[in-house]
Length: 56
Image 1 (cartoon, rainbow, N blue to C red):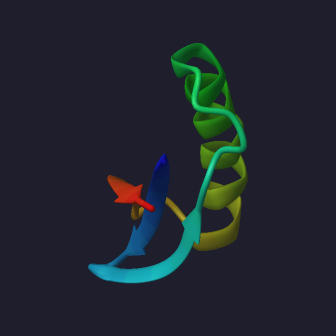
Image 2: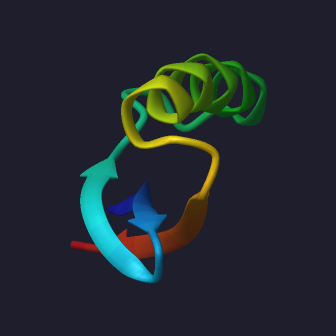
């Protein structure tokens, strides 16, 4: 099984990892948009999301 996760990097250091519950592209997009607003409030403007795939 495959999972898509996003590492939240602030100033080049990974602070946390978020993962969407559903793998449908439209739902991942809306989930990341919602999360990005809260991450900017939490960490400031210097937030980067790095996508990676985990295979189980």
